Image: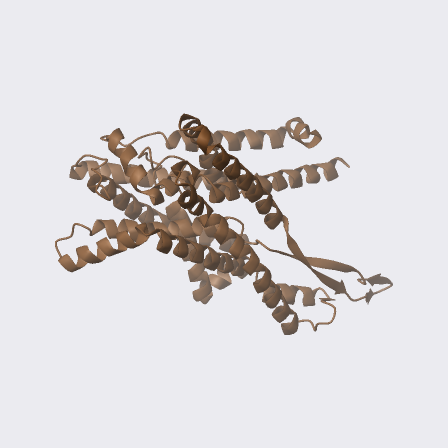
Length: 427
């Protein structure tokens, strides 16, 4: 409470938090600017028949179910980030720009990400709107037939909405009050809690009370598990040899190198959702194709993604793969081992350099496996519960709780770090 009150006593920090809150409110405003020509009844029917789009709607903060200009959310920007990170690994010039370019190099890579996000947003906007105009799974079209001019204006509006969200996300990040992209997704999830609660109360049945109590208990356990996994780390002891410089003695201290179990945070789940979005949308383009082979192949892909076992297995696998991928991107054992050696440090019992790097790789792979499996189970937990209870209201589950808790922890830590800096300044 003392730290909470201290926030409002510091004008600059208070202004930052107010600015971030206003920017998040702006994203909620965008999610409620609809595209004209929507059949509301068919819209409800569409989301009842397409559970995957119901999950995507959670990440878009209701923008998809409202068919708003923010309907595709930050998915194009996230996908563009994945592409840039893959290219950074494959192209030496980009890798050198990331490592040695400093702030200018990172700014250049961010600019490339924005360039790629624009055509991806236009493509995804076209695919999503086409899906709404054709209907899916036997449902009637959600959007009436559009003229060529209407198509142009609609795609331009949805693309612009996604780019505005991207700009707001980067703006929020610059305030150092949490990650902008994560906070926007967090705001979208939190904004749906009242709707989720009202649906639960409207469909309340005393016979389902044990199920609801069990769901609440599991929810608390998931929150506790997320906190434990997010905060858990393996401390690698590091010692520094004594060095004499002139008349002074340096070094001779022991510290530790923290390796987090969940280094990647919630990014793997967000990446997995973005990647799984495209096959279904692209396949829906060609369901009514004139070529029978193309139409049958597209129908097969759509049916495959509607298969619960296949969907859950692929979702789980992608989360695990992206956990390892993103961990490898942000933590390089070779660089860490080199930095330790350069500073005169060593891990007891290991030689500096390659042997230290091999040890770090081994430990990192093992603890990342635990974090990846945890994220994978959390990701598919809502679907497992929905299958067990036959209740569509339990879709709001593990993934949403994971993002909410992780973002809150990250944001609180950043605010605390700024408070500590100001404490030192005052001291």
